[in-house]
Length: 302
Ligand code: ATP
Image (cartoon, rainbow, N blue to C red; front, side, top):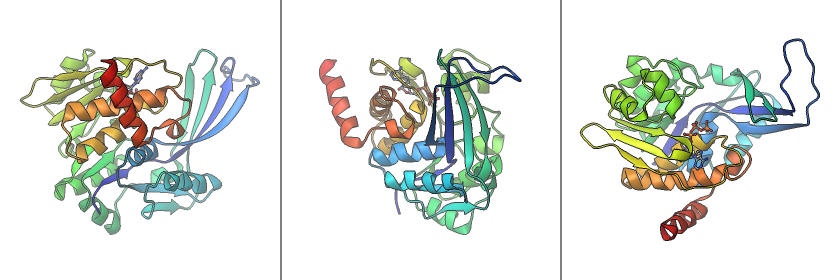
């Protein structure tokens, strides 16, 4: 196969909407509860598949009912799940409390994701035939490093989202082709608040960086080239959940198609801007015709 392989997490997000988050020992009555299929890996896979990528997912769901739904959600967006393992026990879950001011508190329990600490021979064969491997940090680091090293051995481009933010071991940085942090992760990784300066520092460790800047767009830096900033379309954001995952998934589709970085970033920005105008994570991600139409509108509107 050619295309994109995602090595990453699947989580069921269990979201409680409350006027005010409870303090320790307190019970509050919430307004609403939703279960939303998510996980950074699954979100990036859905974003890339909807943008027209040929996408396969490596990871694990549990033997509970959530596992069935998580797998079906991927398949519904035409993501190949042949190598998505089913691990005995619960699926990954994220327990999220959202208050009326939009603040949230989250507990993530890795569940089945915690079993993906190695590659199977089948995983390596799939990665070897891909054009790009997408990675995040919601799996055990040993699994992420094994995936990135396999891709590197076979000359497959690796795209790493360093989230949840944590120090990156040198052996992972050594096999990362493109690092895509948001500005908080970039600051955390470098100790530098200014995104341009942070990007410059990151280029000492990886050849290319794209830092996402929320409503301010995204910044690309590569060794030996001038940094480029691509603005985000101005939209009214309703729910920015998974904006970053949408951006990375769609960006990778464009890069695999051989499109130049600034064009790929503009296309990914359009997709992310479409997704923030709707509630939900993977459910809010646009399909390719919408992204193309959005790009045309942006171009005519200047
Ligand atoms: P999240 O954690 O919410 O998934 P993130 O923190 O990883 O997102 P951001 O930098 O906030 O990543 O957003 C990623 C991309 O999404 C931005 O580069 C931008 O293109 C788009 N985006 C995010 N917020 C907005 C917004 N309010 N308006 C337009 N585009 C946005």
